[in-house]
Image 1 (spheres, rainbow, N blue to C red):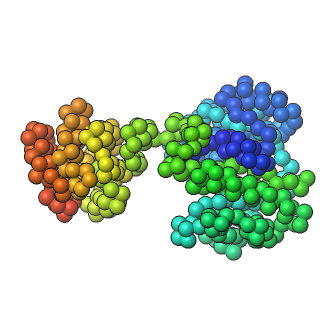
Image 2: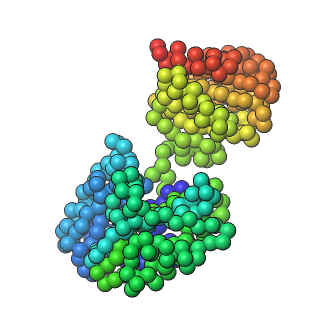
Image 3: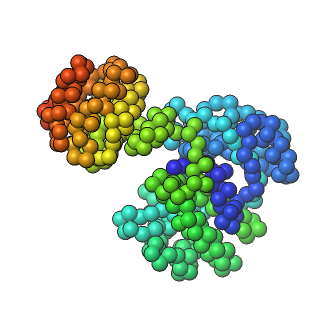
Length: 387
């Protein structure tokens, strides 16, 4: 789950990680009020959306007077913000963060992520802060510092020293940096982060380290024990179909293709998406209903796919094990009768109670296309898409 910058900075403050003073506003009047409360200029007006590249899209502006604060807030709040991560449609901005400007001497990059290849936690740092770190890594890999931490033993002083040395920090900053790293690592572990990123982490002219930006993503699978952070969820920043699917514990991701699909099992779902690509089409979603799905979950999953206007055909690919084929068939029939079917539906069933499931589909009187195997399903999808 992604959270906004201002929310991440709330967590930073509670863990003794220095951030600029700032407050969130939903209107130009509120932005001016906050700027007045901060008491000095310049201030920075920053769009609050779940996407990077805000500065490039005009979502970060410096203001040196109240008039400039008002015009900056009006400009950001009055139109969708388009960044490299939002797509051409952009993202509606409903809040801006108004915070004090800093006298910046140097910008650094710092992040913490899980490294699945080593089953460890990785610190990534660079002196090239404020830039696209992917571009830096691709063109100047020597500028990227990577330090691995065993999560069972945790962070040690040597880890902090290694990163500080790689950043070539002065001795006067080494102690401050080590303390900041310890607090960041504690926050990362405590909140079940899948990403914690500061870009840039700045060194001010006064010799202080301050997190000028803050990006956090929380592991969805750990939200059951992160009740406080769950209150930070902003469904306005999420795809409406994905929000709807989350209500029924469905593993659904909306994509840009034209073939909707429902599968049980993540591996089979990925293989099904490959199958759709081989048929000359593009998957419109990832939907794993899981082995323990019941008729209601199947019904809701099918209904969500039908609500995607880009879907031209649906492929249901089920291997009946824990989820029996007859349960799947009943769910599909119930959903089709309630919502109506306005696109062709190809169904491939194998496994437990497969004949019973096929019988339910045949007796429904609905226009459902049964495939004998995966090759048959691919051929039928290719034929429909090619029309």
